[in-house]
Length: 134
Image (cartoon, rainbow, N blue to C red):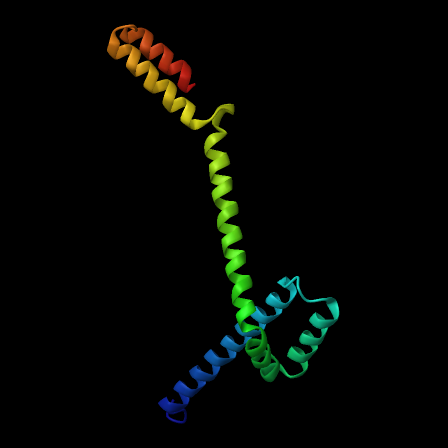
């Protein structure tokens, strides 16, 4: 360990970190390139050739030229995913047992009101509640 000083260890860690970050950027650029529907095939091929043949310069040029639109596409994708998730949750919550989940709450409230007024006995209330929840 004496022949590998502490400064060399830190520099090696820095180089490894920068190398991993560059790969992250490269994959981000390539996925953004194929996700963009506004570019035609030739433009995508040109950008891909530039990024492959001149890796560091190609990625930096791509980020400078298309960085803002890259952010806008990421933001749109996040909003679309959130909207799809909310729609799924809403549909899943209302499709329990073939009727809306809020219908069960309303029916239970009606049963409780009838029980409180004395129109239903406690036994009838429990049977109706069990039938409704089944």
